[in-house]
Amino acid sequence: MLNIAHISDLHLDGNEEKYNRLDELLCDISDHGIDHLVITGDITNAGRDVEYKQAIRLFKKYGYYEHSRLSVIPGNHDLYPFFFRKFPRKPEWDDIKGNPKLFLKNLKEILPKLRQYSQSNYSAECKRFASYFKQSCLTKYPYEKNLSSNSALVGIDTNNILPTYHLDGSRIKLFKNTIDHIRTRSHLIHSLYEYSDNPLCCNGDVDLESVETVLKRQYQKRKTIIVVMHHYLYDKRTVVSEEGEVFAETMGIYQRNKLLALFKKYKVKLVLHGHWHITESYIAKDVEVLNGAGIND
Ligand SMILES: [Fe+2]
Image (cartoon, helix red, strand yellow):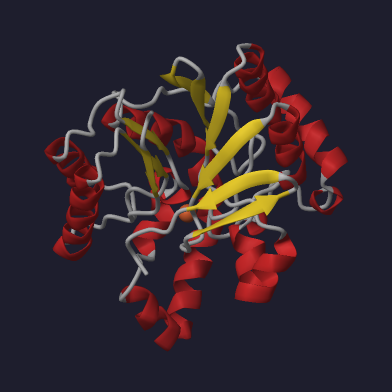
């Protein structure tokens, strides 16, 4: 039997505190005889080399830095470091709360650049992420990995937040996606792909077509499928009731229901994700889901 541990949202920031907490956590995981470690994104806080290197140093220390023992996918902090470098997390967030004028001034400066930045750097950041974890994931998503003779892991990049831009960048796909999004998201017709739809780069999106191709293939091989992704699959009403409207609007995933329908169709056994820093299991439209908290809060 294969023992898998799932953790998420490490947000390593170059400082010792989080590094030491991850060290303790990995020590515990290793002591429990875990064969395979899954990390569902936001490994770094702002995609800095020093942050990636902290993670890799610890994965190596506990013997997880190899393809057969580690599976990772990127989170929004890994792929959209621009915003998070300007607005690091605590304790700086507390300063921002205490100084809303400064926050708004910075935001005004950043927002107009954000969309352009994301479009031009998404692919580069994806490749950079993959270069650090080449033992554990591929540059193209979704990726498939055999965990055992009868089980497979499917890693999805849910950070596909600007639907006009895809990894292959083909014009046909771009056109198709544009039409698709106009059809499925009427609220986007008047503000199609505006950065205001995703001001903090925290909302997610998926390429359903490529996800279905991979799931179907594994289903036909009769594999037990475990999906690994960053964004959560909670019903929006749950998120609103627990965290409020703003959180729900800026931390969700587009096409959630369609994605869940695919998971159900291809009998996905379990979905692992992070992004919202809580630990719990829940059912989303008959699909079993585990949310793994980070080492942050
Ligand atoms: Fe996240």
